[in-house]
Length: 184
Ligand SMILES: [Ca+2]
Ligand SMILES: [Ca+2]
Ligand SMILES: [Ca+2]
Image (cartoon, rainbow, N blue to C red; front, side, top):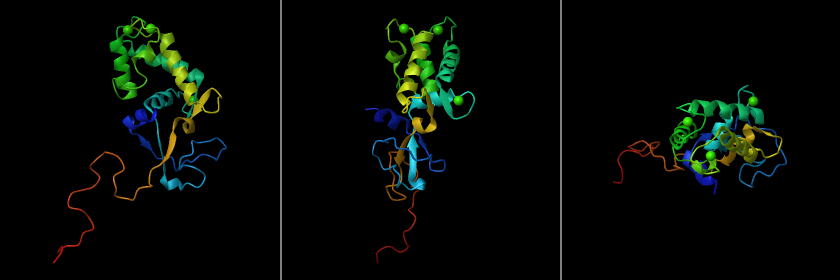
């Protein structure tokens, strides 16, 4: 269930304003179809999707495979605290905390170190991000657009004022619309 990852991140991005042209691609049959009101459409992105987006060096909002290779190498070197050419478990955790937003998220340690020798080499690290590119690349053109990174959802099926997640804080104390006096 990939959804679990996205829920943990809980990053909601409004994509209504830049809705992309309609395509024939099956979106998964959610509410975000042709009939969706853009004002009510939102999207979520996974931690891995965030990292892929950060590899977009030329800022054209498209991430190519060469950008992924370059970007992966850049963050690999930056994460290699002792500069010994491999990422130790602690260094991977540091990378995860910084770039995935959590120390023990997804992709997990095993994904960074498929051969199980307790370190992640640049090849292993890069291969992971290339595989993430492929996983998000819905039309198999070896690059990912924002549309491919974001999973569209309908965010306003609930009524205004009703909390949709677990996050408190929106509803202020002392409620709004109630008239003074109360029941007589
Ligand atoms: Ca780019
Ligand atoms: Ca290291
Ligand atoms: Ca390894």
